[in-house]
Image 1 (cartoon, rainbow, N blue to C red):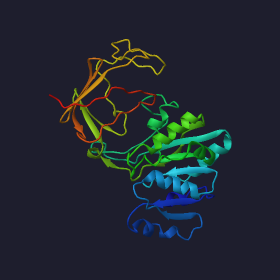
Image 2 (cartoon, helix red, strand yellow):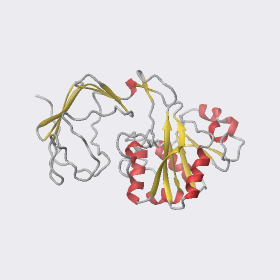
Image 3 (cartoon, helix red, strand yellow):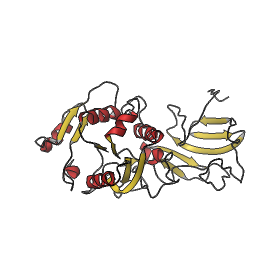
Length: 303
């Protein structure tokens, strides 16, 4: 709050939607109560989370441009001014995903979610952007937000799904055809975003290397014998492709025994990992930024 109100751009209204069960947040924000730009609202809807609160705050606001922050970031003094400059410079621009940086931290025991548009593990396209971009620094025109239907309240922290409210929204924005931009000059700092490595998912590959996520450049384990990869339609690995050509069904088998995980694709062992954390809980079927179809799924105990 102090970083936004102390910024160089002052023509804004700020909505804080509080879902806490006590008055600590309200008490902490007492210095801003007398400012006409500040609006404090409680959201005690049962069974909903951050997506509900964002929808509520945006519905109550009046501005043409919507800028979204999480409660664990701070904004440099030019953050909002840079957002306004970008939208003023291009009337067709509808959506911006900004940079999320981390303060110094001990990478051996902690991680901090970040996003740098100029440094992603894969090219930043309209279909990969939603998997990388951070909802802690989104901005968009109100007309676009209304057109795509706002946040899905099934998604996000505090919801039934518990995650992916920003990914879901940005995927729908990409599908809408809206003009978008990733801007490194629009930056916020994940000042209070520290997580312990034990708080995130982790897996140890066969070479003994532990990867954790999210995020980080080491947050994926490539399959065995994977060759060079190109982000082009129909690309096939020249060094031992395990997937069938486009349009044909693949058979994927996953086996988990304790914290040991194996993956076979069309009968070939594609990956293996140990020390999985978590090693129990819900099962997730994910899409890597593109359309995917599943059929004939079954679950059975190991013999």
